[in-house]
Amino acid sequence: MTFSLLGRCARTGQFGAAVTTSSIAVGTRVPFVAPGIGGVLTQHRTDPRLGPRGLDLLRSGCSAESALAAIVASTPDHRWRQVAVMDREGRTAHFDGERVKPSRSVFHGKDVVALGNILANEAVAPAMGAAFLANPGLPLAERLVRALEAGEAAGGEHGDVQCASLLVMDREVFPYVDLRIDDAAAPIPALRALWEKYAPMADGFVQRAIDPEDAPII
Picture 1: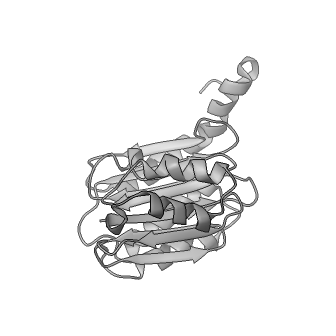
Picture 2: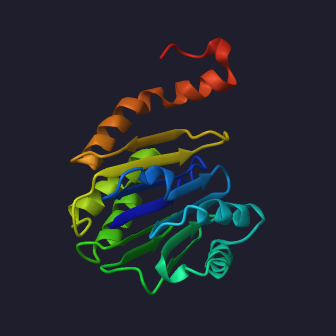
């Protein structure tokens, strides 16, 4: 009961992920992103160990496809897993285990992969991908939020979602954006509101870290 996506901004080099689901704390379990490296999504009966494992493979120079193959080969429970990988070039790959429940949905496009399970229909991931690709000049975080909104509008999960997460990595080892909504009746609108509040502050928080003398008061 999850839909999510990985995205890359070719203009800034940022990588990011957004996800929503019916259980809480999804931001700690599904999205894994590293600056200049790429990202991994691990969902359905989630194994968060696969995220760091995938990022290590990408750091070693693996492509998305070869990293995914190694991830799947390394876990004896892969039939329960739904995994997506994006490498530093924006190439993507995904895996659906045989026990991943329908409706499943997936979309691959330039610098984006979207997927989901236990969805209302198979149109969810393509709607997310189309929304992400529609406005490449917008900030990556905004494109990711719009993609979640489009997935929900296309039918979303088979049931109600209560959790949503937005993660973007830029050049630093800490996230440029890391926002989470847990246990909410409408988590995607709440994530939208939180992102709009945070967006004007994002660069300032980075500047506080790298140039505190001239950092803005936030």
